[in-house]
Structure formats: structure tokens, C-alpha cells
Length: 327
Ligand code: DP6
Image (cartoon, rainbow, N blue to C red; front, side, top):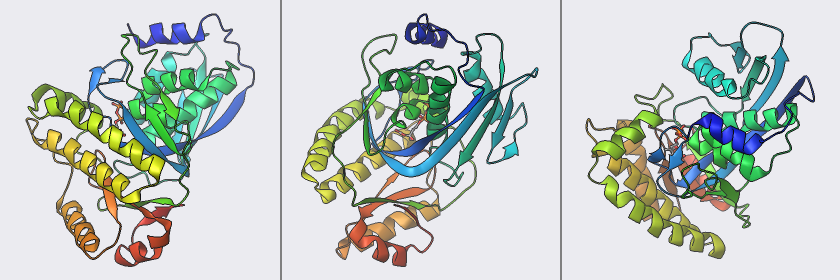
């Protein structure tokens, strides 16, 4: 089964005449508290395990799309035109190939209001916003689960970027992935805060797609990952229902470090942390010893995302002046 087969299953006999000439949509970025790491299908981005994320509210991507009367697509990122052979353009263009019903070409503008630094899930909100914009452009009127599946075909974590608050990506069991999409959790937790701690804004050493593949293939620890996720899921769900921040912090930090442990044990090893990352971890652990309820999570890059409650925002800012707190 390939991506086009899935798209045919979703769009069925919808007419693909554009309803409008251009449209723009916003999707928030998301940070996984229980990570997606490893695929059971590399083409459809079907994950080995469930994952659970928190959205970054109004931080994310606004993507506009319009049909243009040209021979090629045009891509802009933060108002800058991108070279046709850049990884950004190639990835978007390959995704749009799945939807070119009358060989039309598009101008796509992606505007991010989050730092374009390593590991801040800009592809997740970018693909989610693009899918919402395509849905509007062609007036498909798809359900959120169908839109989530389309976003997943662009980037796995994008399927969680359609919602505010917590999103649960159910891995599904079917080979076509029609049961692998994200749904929102009902619980709202407005006091929860995420702080972006950029220790290094340069490009990732290895992209998450290749890093996942290498981990699944070569890490002996990967066999334990599914067990860890199953356990963490139960704990995190309880913590969310009880609004127990310490449990949420502990299980999220433990989950992120366990994911990184599977990568460090891959071969060749994958180490996203640098010295500043590890120093920041020690600083967090020291502050915790002193009674501050501060935890972190880390994705496929050296930067940390701090987890804390609103009441501690000022103290966190005092200790990490460079932190960008998402309200
Ligand atoms: C560490 O969604 O970027 O951020 O499906 O290959 O596009 P692809 O991978 P991607 O991986 C995200 C990995 C992660 C964990 C997470 O967000 O759950």
C-alpha cells in the first residue's frame, strides 16, 4: 500500500475542483510527552507505539496555498523563497504530487511563529496547516481523523498537530493505517507551561526519519521501548486526569530519556545531546532537589523543552533567562 492508495481511500469520489483560488490555515506545533520513535511502515509513517502530545497553543505554522498558472511550484518559508532543490521544497513538492488532480501547481507560503531551530517540530505544524489548507481549497470537508491521516503521510508527528491541548496518536493495527490517527483528549490544563530552551540552533546531525530507522534496526534496547511506552501511557493518563503535575513531569522526562537511550545504543550511535544539553539537565535536577517542580523533555535535537506550572514561570525565567515560555 502506498500513499496514493490511502489518499484514494480518503477522498473517494470527491470532486477535486478548487472551491477557492487561495486559502490559509493555522496549525499549532506539538511536543510529545510520550514519544513516537520507530515505524512499522516507513512509507505511511505508521508508528510502532502510541504517542501523546501537548500542543503549543498559538505557536505553530500558518500555511497559505494558491493554485498558480506556472510550470513549477513556489515555496516560501518565513517570506523567503526556497530553492526548488532544497530539502524543504523537495519534501513539500513530493507531498503535493499526491494531490495534483489536474497537474496544477501551487504557491505555498509557510509562516512560523516558533524558532526554526533544531527539534522544534516545525514540519509537524507545517504539514498539519497544509492539510487544513488543502481541505479548504478543494472543499473536501473531511473529518478530523481523516485530516490527521493525511497529515501523517507528510510527517508522523503532524497527525497530532490538528488539536489544541493533549492529542493521543493511536498507532492502529491495520496495514493501510486507516486506524492510525490522533484524537484530542478532553482534559484541559491551562496552568501547564512549556519553555523552549535552545542550547543550539544549528541543523540536526541526523534527521529523525533516518535516526528512527537506524534505532529500530540496530539497537538491542529498542525491544524494550514498546513496554516502556505502554507503562508510561497508563501513568501519564492518570496524571492528566488527576492533574498531578509531578507525575506528569516524571513520566515525560523518563520517557524522553528512555527514547534517547535507545538511540545511544544504536550503531553507529545517535547522540543528539551536546555538553550544553547535559549541563542544562544537571541544572534542572539540582533545582528539583531544591524543591522546584521543573522537568524536561527532549526530541531529535540538542534543545530541551522545560515542563512546569504557571506559578513557577518567574523562577524558571530567573534560572534560564533565555527560555521562551509558551503561554
Ligand atoms: C522525537 O514526526 O519528525 O519528535 O514521521 O519521519 O516525519 P517522520 O518523523 P517526525 O518524528 C518526531 C520524533 C520526535 C518524537 C515525537 O514527536 O513524538
